[in-house]
Length: 131
Image (cartoon, rainbow, N blue to C red; front, side, top):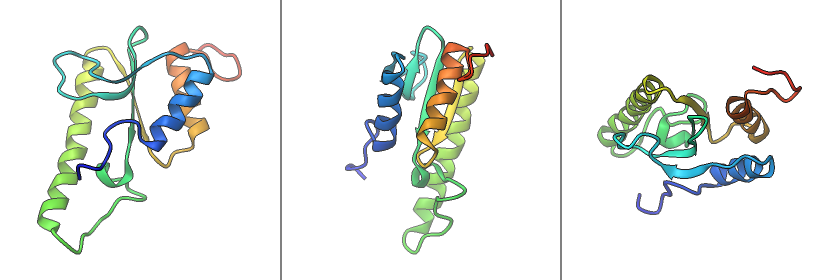
């Protein structure tokens, strides 16, 4: 598991490249709140928006995540369940602290992800309406 990246994954890089191309500037792999023991994938500090791009396997995607394991099931099932619980806990803590939390799956359409992030950060939809 050491070889699995916690940052700079392909889905993250694709999203970050397009956000940067749209003129958005952000921080990468930082703690939005100093007391929070988790790092967000993309953080817009001034706008208080955090973005997580979750891997289907590790975060238990309902479409692509594993529902059963042929080996070490007593390890993997609780591990993925705990990851899901931790994600919900982090979302709640950040929301309570005034952050907008955006979570996407690694398989989500990059253009849709970038548009949703841009709306949250700029408060303007792609057709020019203020949200």
